[in-house]
Image (cartoon, rainbow, N blue to C red; front, side, top):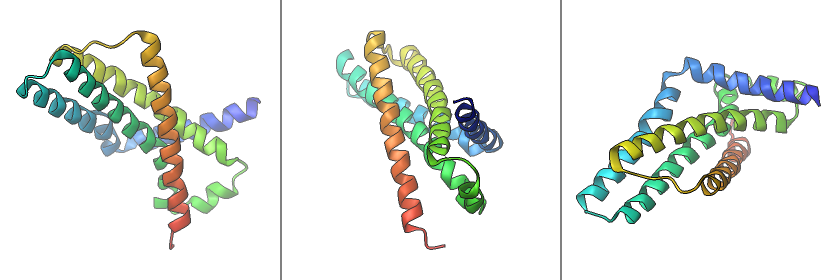
Length: 165
């Protein structure tokens, strides 16, 4: 069991190193989700929507930002190897496919949670958005994170299945 945790942590750390060196990965966390919140919030203010309708739309924008960031981490876990032409080395390593995917997913959960906190505070400050009760938020976040895992694994499947190189 200890080796499993070490292998998963190794892939989490690997994704952290890639994300730390890539300035575009930082902008994917900050810029695009913030653009979504600002555009939805300003559109709702312009259309003079009620607070419940605006909260509904902002909730969708927040969760789509979380989904984007988390699934990108799962997808990038494989794509970093494809781009650096080291995919064969990773598949020959003494790790299982679930070590690879779960490590990337946990790192995506950490980044997705940071995006959630950032967007929730920004929405509260800019548009008077209030979060639902904690249990509702927690269950919703777990559903979005699980959906991100499924989408990221689907992207990985199609990259491997349709690869011509």
